Length: 137
Image (cartoon, rainbow, N blue to C red; front, side, top):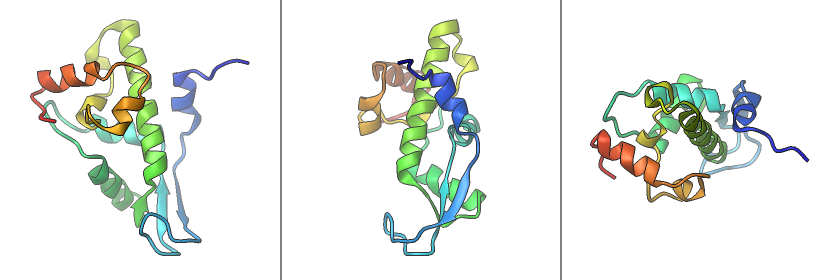
């Protein structure tokens, strides 16, 4: 049984979806339009940030919903895809050791968050890069 590479996970889902929900979800009523993002859309959002910016996942979800004409962005898929973005970019860093060529995911993932605990690499990577950029946790 072959394991799917992080690159394949990142590239597998390229399209986004906006669909009306048929039951209330995450405090949103029936009929609300929910954005299901892609890893690429999440990465593009993070890549728009500048050195030293502290990003927030909830704000990103709101911004993406507005951008794609939805009422809200699915928190579950956002977390899954953000994890893929972080792990894929960390893997790219390990391959070429060039921080300038990866998505700065440490700007949005808090070192003490549940997501940071689930990553396949040590959260010290996030801590170090937040320190370099003077991002408070």
